[in-house]
Image 1 (cartoon, rainbow, N blue to C red):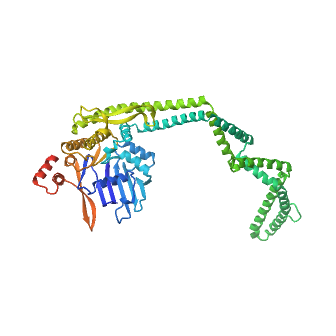
Image 2: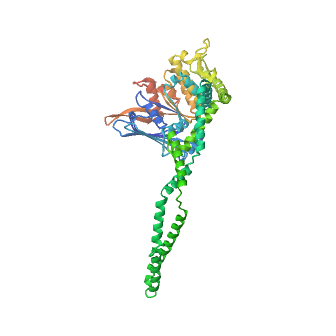
Image 3: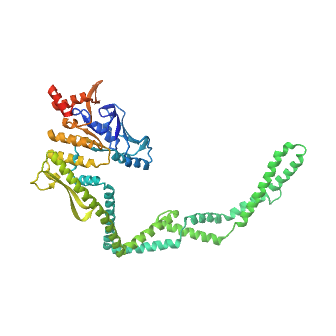
Length: 551
């Protein structure tokens, strides 16, 4: 559940620190006081898009922090662990910073997070039903998504969409092969020739590096031999060679050490130098013995280099890239071979279609079961919301060939009374009916929701009187299993809440700012009375408010 919300420099809020309780809480106040601004701030922390307009005028940045208690919220705990976010004291702290230029940064438990990560974990923490949510229910995609969410079928729905894409791709490959058989055959012949040519070249990147090194050695063999001979002569193979001179002087110093032992360091260094010169001479002699002046081998190496560079020029790549070109052409040849095999293409398409139908069949079964239960529950709820005799049904209309979203289209249908046939929701419901039906759907769907915090932002627009009292009772019932926050203008709804805050605008230092007041029993009576009676609050109004509150 939501524990705390800290808001700084957001629209008309300078700084608010709000501590939330469990159960059903009502947020009330005059229009424009900033009730929905609190919900917008929370939505920002949950990953909503941001722009510079949310930063309070004159401030450098806006900052929102929302702290959630994760007790019992296994999905969120698992997600945080999988994403390597620290989990301390069983809480999840979401933080969002938006600067005056509109750039934003997100954090989860103190670590930098992407907007997508905020959204993903946010979906497991809180669900916000906006004041126009019932209008969204007129869209076919929103109806389908609500049903799939209610049934927990979103992962399966994504699998079905991917399976449909794979089936259509296999089908298109078969049709393409049938339409362009001649062109595919010509492409295959060309690829066979190119791959065969590279097969014969047998290019190997490691051998290519060694070949170039050998070419450099063979090309400069004469100068290498001349240089080695001169070095050997200087070191050990000429009169006055360095090795002999150094060895002689080391021996002479050994005799002088009998007179003065401080010459030992110089003697030891000369002795070491003599050994090094001997080893250098031995190494040079071994190199000279291996060095070849072989014009025939040089010609052979140059021929191989020319063949490789010619192939590289033909394919417009560097020689070192020929291996990758070979692999790519071989893969294309294999694909072209499969494309030239109609039976293989038919088999692939058949298998892809079978996979799609199997997963889509599972999706259909899950939808049918949930649709029946949800239809009955919403119909029952509609009776309470002054829609006696009304019926609600989620219709699953079969699609002959299926589609990316399954084997059926989904349509919400309603009959306003017993005498009317069921018709699409968009064509039947009036504004007031749509508000009540939408609210019934949202409340019923939320009962089975795993999201611990449910927020209703003025979803009770367009209702009043007895219906408003029933809506309040429904939200209170929902507050028994979830934390429910409701922004409302209806006293009948607010009176059912377990706790209530009043949001108001205040003028401080010439600036209009939003403030929040936690209401005690007396404060709730005054606020409910204001909602009932407007400007002039009488004793009768207060009495009515107390009666609504059950005090």
